[in-house]
Amino acid sequence: MQDSEELVFLSFSSRPSRLKLLRCVLRDAADMAGLDGDTTDAVVLAVNEACMNIIQHGYDMQPDGRIEVRVSREPGALVLQLRDYAQRVDPGTVRSRALDDIRPGGLGVHLIASLMDESGFLESPSGGGNLFQMKKFIAG
Amino acid sequence: MAFPVEDKQGFQVVLLNGEVDLSRSPDARKVILKSLKKMRNVLVDLSAVEYIDSSGVASLVEGFQYARSNNLEFGLVGVSEAAMNVLRLARLDQVFPVYASLEERLAADA
Image 1 (spheres, rainbow over the protein chains, first blue to last red):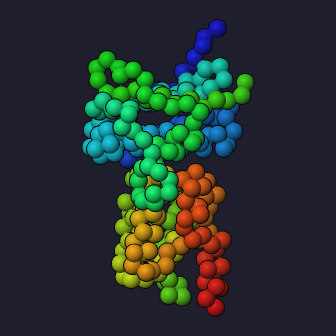
Image 2 (image 1 turned 90 degrees about the vertical axis):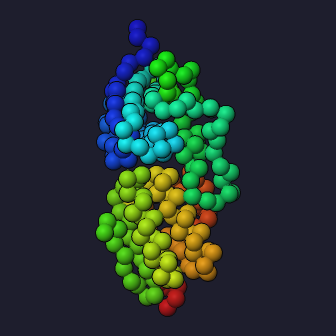
Image 3 (image 1 turned 180 degrees about the horizontal axis):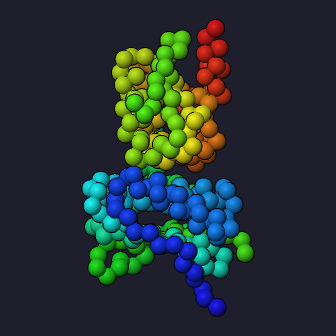
């Protein structure tokens, strides 16, 4: 029996307008995986936030970067892997702002941690860039 | 303009709608700050917002802060469930003044 089944693989440029396409596909993939509405909303928001971080911080809003999103299902979890080709991120420098420090920005990391059951950078892929993985546990 | 603004009983009412994400939040920010820079009190109507991410929330926070430092009123009205879920996650639902509807806020002055 296969441990992990790929549902969809997306590759798109680092343009903010592409996030809408990403969300549409993610919704359908989550539906295919049997997630309920609230869990789907959580996954869509978390992946959107992680891709925004890549666009804003990894590629500094330049539209010619590449982002790859792989959605797969493994027993008990939906797995989201995000690959970029930006400068390598030092995971120690990625942190949420304190929530009582009310200011614009810095919320994405907090939202991802709140919405997903696991998240973090995997070993840097060969060829540079970053590989970020998130998991949402699902019943069945 | 993507986000209309209406004049209601002395307030500038900014109507956000649809998906307020990284491609549209710069417009939301611009509209909110433009209204505040007229030194007018601002209410942001979120009843037609189907999706908002942290960039959209950041534009609300920026408006809130600008209003606070200029002694202006800034509030959210008719917050949709989708928007409220994100505000709760960001623990901002207790930070912004939130009214069930535009009518509720306007009636408070009557």
